[in-house]
Length: 206
Ligand SMILES: N[C@@H](CCC(=O)N[C@@H](CS)C(=O)NCC(=O)O)C(=O)O
Image 1 (tube, rainbow, N blue to C red):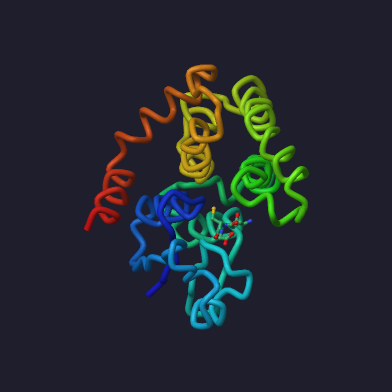
Image 2 (image 1 turned 90 degrees about the vertical axis):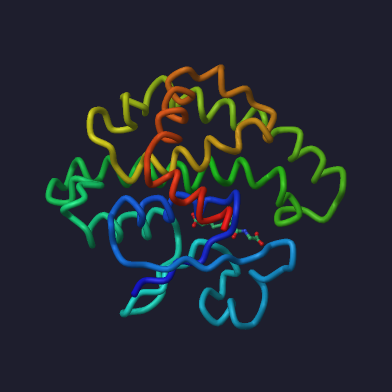
């Protein structure tokens, strides 16, 4: 059975929701960042990057959210979480998810994890001060150019949707008002109504 390592409030939320949507048998295991469990030896043996998500499969461990999401979609084609037989359409899915992973997530990380890029407190403070502007710019681009609506890729729900949902959930704490992006805000409300999202929320409450 697949095993997904997750932490509350993180990008692992996307993979967790996708597994739930896919109807694949899996178990989730929580990593507690407040206890530094992501750097504990037993977790580093699974993911030497010390990050979540990490998906343990019968062929090895997958990391990186876009890769995990694509694996989930391809493993459960009947759930129709991505157009796996259409190279261009699948490329569009990968392009959107790669943007979230390599640009938007990194813009967010400059707030809480600025010490990855600098030791000097002045530099750290300067990076943190840019988070709201950079996240706002990213979401302005998503709203105007990337988000087709009602779902990210248009009429079909896909693995882009839980990923956008997970990252949009950081906007307020990054100093950005989600109301500035009505399409994204409406998307967040509709995501909250999905049984898979409710199930993952409920799992965290257990
Ligand atoms: N590029 C990776 C990023 C994974 C990542 O940075 N995860 C964060 C949570 S959102 C994490 O595990 N942080 C732990 C730490 O920095 O110590 C992905 O998209 O999966």
